[in-house]
Picture: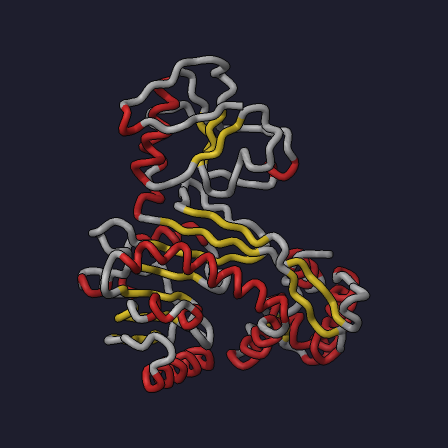
Length: 376
């Protein structure tokens, strides 16, 4: 069963960019394709995962203050925040969104207005702004000099669509977090291919490997679904008709045909939640103290698929202590590489500590700082 990302690559390979003019999807066509994805029990399962993990992540932050400000980037027609518990929703006093799809933006504003009237969702909002444009790397997207334009939580909930440099957008978003206290969060929900965020260290990472997208095996449905995945249509009607036929063939060839779901095509769609704090860019503080490994190899096949933020290799017990203290200070995790047999010895956007240079040592820290450390 191919992933959605593999399907996207296959669909795009059917088109020669140099000789075949293409056009972007209209807002209505994008909305139509999006609606196909969010139907069915599979999407509900992913949504349950996302809401559960988001609730666990935001709970301590929300419980520590009475009012929370949120910036959501690309929320679609309804904010994911509407699915949080009533206790958490009542803490949200300010909501700002960037939604470039005009249909989605209108539906989002309608949802926010109706929610405020019924009191059923985000009932304590004092300020609401929906920008009908994309979130860009331009520093004047939001007036940074205005202290009111800082947020406790910034959400990317729909795959950072339209953003070609994921790392730069996350780094830019970090600038909009409140400066004090330092527990503000940038939260990213991402599907399919892993995010390669060179040098950014995440506060928390949770995966949903079993995600599946199912689409009806019907020509008309596939003709709406395939352009949404590919991200474009053909300008020439005749050429588009030819490509449509090729896209249907590709969808059916790459999909899983499950007897339990007759007349449906299945595609793997794993999900990941990544959370970052203002400390996400503090990796240089560690690499200035502990040797960095540039070309690191592990034996485990699963671990080889993971792209860590960095791999450091302590050569002294002081280096080990520096790794632990750095992680505790910045609120991030570490993975330990011993024999390289575990699938968890490397984890996306987390620093891996290769203990290969240390086979036996004594580890000591003051009583208040003592932590268990196991080396394989």
